[in-house]
Length: 246
Image (cartoon, rainbow, N blue to C red; front, side, top):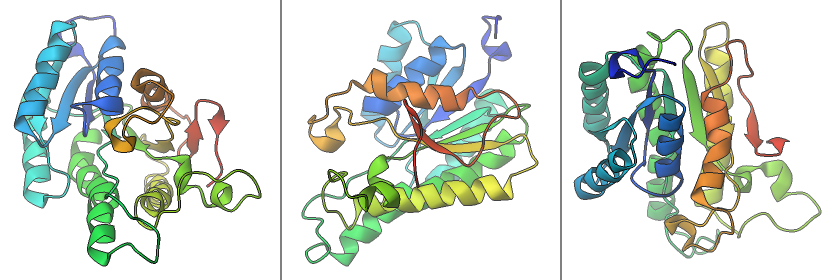
């Protein structure tokens, strides 16, 4: 990672990287020497993010990516193959809350399905499409952006509530954690390490900027997971303080 040419750099893809935590993950990976694909579905926001990152000296390129579309995901994989030839790190960050209300007695089935399609099925779509590229890497890493609101242990602990009552967003993070485990199990014995992390309560559009942590602070745990050494842990869920319960 001492070379400066794009051809010698490791390649990372961050989904939903046009703003917030995803943007800071992209910036952070660039600072670590990666060439970063900025995945985002909105062309205007993607272009603006790429231009801002480049203005700050980051080596990035934009990739059109709607995680809810099989066609878009396949096209993104083809675009990265053409642009870079392989992929070393995939950060599955794109997610939606699904709007309110989310109490189980009030949420609609369509609302839940929309959140699952983005936050869970979208991760499966992207991961499976990118795996052929990741397998070309000597040290491939898959990082899933989860949350402790998806921790069943913390949700049921006799302590202060973790997040609001939610039948859409929070359960998708539980589902994402479960998917993380299954990928880690299937890919055990390969160089691919698969882990999930929680950024903490970050001020983002997702929570109407109610969080108290900055996106840069929230990105830190994902930079750590993206750069784990060979033989490092796989199938874990952690935040900045360490391993968290499922």
